[in-house]
Image (cartoon, rainbow, N blue to C red):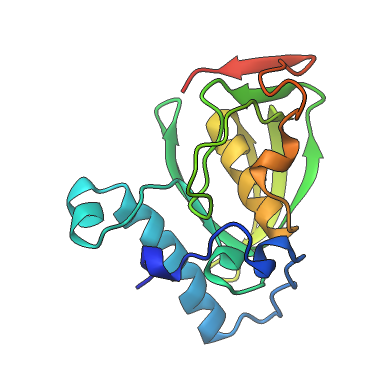
Amino acid sequence: MITMKDIIRDGHPTLREVAQEVVMPVSDEDKKTLNSLLEYIKMSQDPEMAEKYALRPGIGLAAPQINISKRMFAIHLEDDNRQHSYALFNPKIVSHSIEKTYLTSGEGCLSVDENIPGYVPRYARITLKAMDQDGNNVKLRLRGLAAIAVQHELDHLNGIMFYDHINQKNPYHEPENAKAIER
């Protein structure tokens, strides 16, 4: 089971590496890692379990955040009354909208302990191809919070932190052609 002690913090070199593709067919070890990422996220959202195991709540976790530089992440969230729960190997955005979006509350990260204010522009809609835990090819069309969360985790696979996207001169600059999401 992953705990907060397993999550590496901002400044650790693995967070700035481009993660390696997961070799197919997927090894049992990689499957176990991916399932443990999803398990952490689900447990972190259960107040009883979060308190019991001292877990910081999150909606996504990427393998590089537990010092495994491989292209896999898990997302678990509810958006627009729809449950999104994904554990994915080798995800790639294959198309995206021109329109942007951002969270009015800004973004946070389990690897970043301090609150970093500012808007993080993301694509409003994305189409993602990946492989699930069972080795099936999946194609997801996402928008809203789910699209933002996936882009945040994909950034981790590419050595990018969310605050790299914040306008340094004007953190609350509203991106052009962008729709705000209240959170």
